[in-house]
Image (cartoon, rainbow, N blue to C red; front, side, top):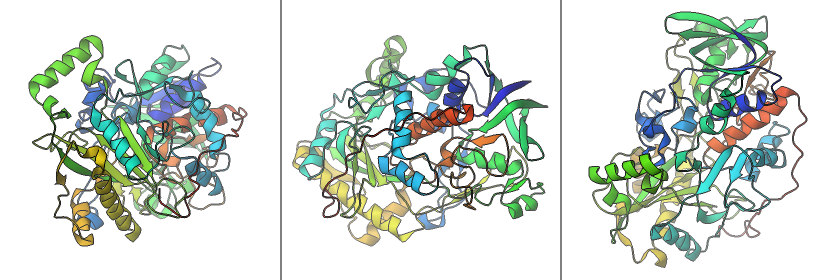
Length: 549
């Protein structure tokens, strides 16, 4: 079996590339996916988001090594093992990131990836309703909506931010990210709008696109040129050949693993596992980043939260309405208000993100408070801690060693303390007076730096945004893995295009930026002139040097 292009992974970037590379019919595309189909309400119902990320049917089941700076805890690292990849098990929150994130990419060696360069690709991919005119796309395959915000707590959160002196923004994905406002969702007609629904399924209707189920074991190389992919399906092994290129889009965990299994990575590590070195790239698997968050939870004095919907009868009623009509509480992820703020004066653009939720419960659906409550998920956006993904063995079926080194930089602790105290300030505003009960978590007794640090150590969780392990950069950067056109340095006809190429993590959730990478990489792969640069300038708070708000 062969095709012009072979893509490994049907996730956010992989699905976008399958769609764009096959669009004009000139080239054939094979997408290799190990995961299962994305059928059924547990995937497609937005309110069921906590289920698939906890199910081995849909998730690779990765977890970290014991993390020494958070008390030796091992955190889960969900990655989608399903059509659509992690876009089929994520929280459906859509965030582009801040303009300065991409300017940093360009300045650090990924030339051509500044905000002016990537904004046209965000517009091309978006089908946005309600965004800022002129800044948003309205004809792309990725539908983006805003929740109805029927619950008054969503408005209380935004008003509280305003009362605390922060900005209000009507579109954090438009000109102005900074501020409190509505959250955007990748939901369409009551269904999860994953990369599979937006890109891959339309592409698979074309005669030049095929989906092959199998585990990618390694890249097949002739000399230093990629010519195919060895896959395992059932008990048989075969090679899918690529006439033009192989593109890896297998996640920030599996993409570096696959490169290393193929002899591309840190030479000494490869030799330890008996793998012949094809290209000594010490940056493969390094630069691992993530967002962490804590939940600040408050009792609600009025019975208006989702707590009343957590019983079995209500869940059955919600599920039935969704199954028949795709409406109601099953048709939203319930993240409908958000905020991006700056932690202190001298910070040019937001470095803290908020998700607000009208119930007190863990992101994975566990440990719900036994009363009405609400919560903010809050965390710093630019952690200075860095980790790695390394091989456990040369066996493709064995999970790699994942070490984030969470909270290993002292600045991360100061940032999180500020997040906790700032959230208390926001929840203490007049807008919440009609709803605010006692603090559930951390609890009013947690006040000193040491007490807050202990709370963070015990309760901090991943936001599930791993990235950076195949860093994009200048060809003379020894830690860069791919160049600015996503080509693996030192190897021909091989590219990586997914969140693993991020030089630095972006502000917010990563599904949107990952799809953008797939969109832009497609033009590089096809040899097209990139879309014309934008001349639109983002809003930067004129008081950023003097004040935090």
